[in-house]
Image (tube, rainbow, N blue to C red; front, side, top):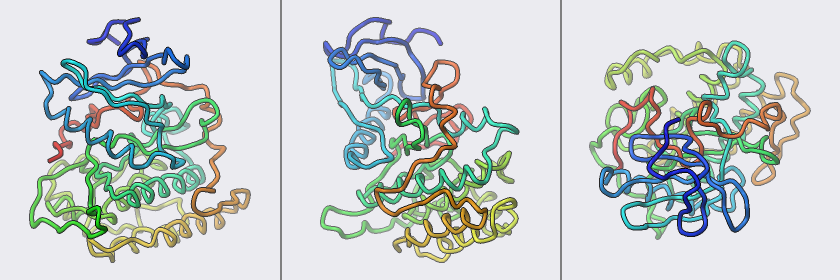
Length: 337
């Protein structure tokens, strides 16, 4: 990858030494750095105040959301958010491959149903905990989940909160829904509700998670090539979702059916959704996965073969601080307001 704004071996704020640029998005650049205080590798996302004012908003938004979920198991560690001269930057834990990229390394370029269901429990809990912190993610998709490295290599993390939005006031009152809003997210995984230009709710994040899980264990979603939001919304509303889950136990459809019955402001039954995933695992005779609830959900062995695959300039597109602007999805991303 070409050299970025920050030259190799330069030191930011007398602490973070630049090792290499590992990613570039629509608003900024991502670097692998060495923390000179701890000698640990970290990730630094840099946004220029001159050329990318919307990116500053994204980065600040991301920092706020990430701080709100610190201490939870399936989120990367936040280290610092700074404003220095012409740049804003966010420093956080370095992660491994995102699931979109990791999927390409597997036979037939897809995960097994067993692996998908097992990872799905961690992914579900991360979305639930983000909601508990008062935020919607608004861009749930395979590339916004990544595996850890070293001792955390069996863990799946929810990443990239640049489009995250508060859905509840500090008082606990839910924010009022707007009649019409511009689209935010990636249309392939968005709910029909969001594609129609309606404000999203917690259920919409989880419908995106359902589509994400389906795609992880299949070559592609059937509407991959449809770009128009209205056309895609109509297709999703009329599509027989039972045909999406070939290979999954039929019980998995209950995940979508529960969400599809909810109103936008209604709270999903996360326990029911987790139970659905666990039932699917049991139906596939994976009794070795002794899943507990809350913070005690166990990590999966399916990722252990990739424990040495840390971020690289060639294979990793997203870590926690990677831009929401994946090359394949850039046209689908809108700015946060």
